[in-house]
Image (cartoon, rainbow, N blue to C red; front, side):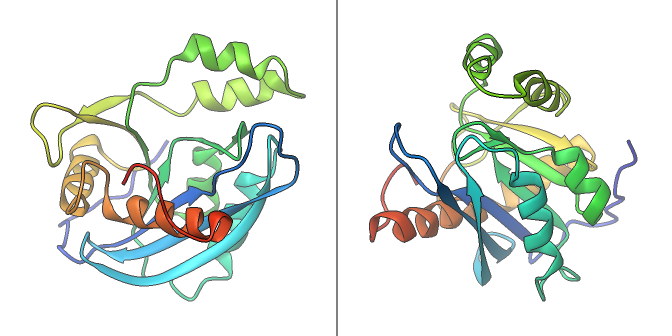
Length: 201
């Protein structure tokens, strides 16, 4: 797969961080999908909102639609997502997002995904093999240190070189271990559902 060439990672590089809202285990229905547009890790420029089906198959399409109708699309340089599973096990095909939008994607995780556990959980859902193929095809996982030299977070870069992805992650992690676009997207998504933001930030 081709990669976007970054001649320079500017301090105010436009990043879209995407996270979903919380839900109860027995919930059935739509879950908010929130995008926070940031300049680097310091300035919130905009917010995008969509919805995806819990344990559905529509997050890739919804995210591409959300980007397509945004006035920010022409300025965005990187998309960051909080893992590849949204609203339960609605699996995001990050390679398809890159192909359709031209935006390189950095998948961020606090912990290394336990693939055996994920595969076991997927078997209870329709089209589980398709979901599993997407997850397995996301790419290699790399550790990257941000605010703490002791505890790394983990990334999977798609359409962007590892070294460029590391620079973007470190540049945008200004308040916590997690890049600010994802931290703020999480706060907004939680507030939409609960009326107030909470959780690990």
